Image 1 (cartoon, rainbow, N blue to C red):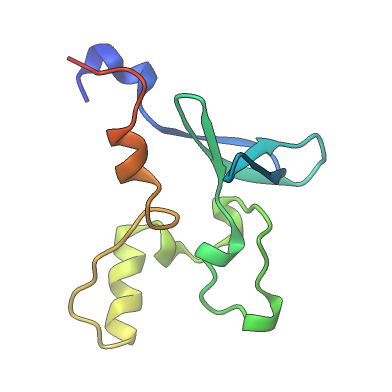
Image 2: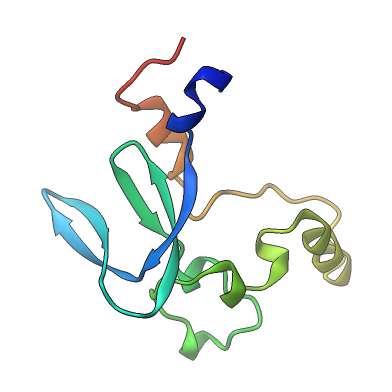
Length: 118
């Protein structure tokens, strides 16, 4: 992204965990007002909190939730490249294609962005 548009780039913001509501067939997330925090992707007018279910290695399946989390709540191999490689070595994985929070987040949101950047 050109430096002149840096303020428009997607970013992570720590804010209170939010709620998901279905609006016109699309899930919409808004930050809450409680004390428990979550990491949120901000891009244009869209907000997506990082949920435990998309970064849950080592958590028993019956304990996985849709609750928003911060990076302190998830395994480093979910976001740190060096830790990710170490985890891959443990699992005897030579290569992996990684997606952001959940498939479809970045690609369609970039391609459907409201402003064309030049």
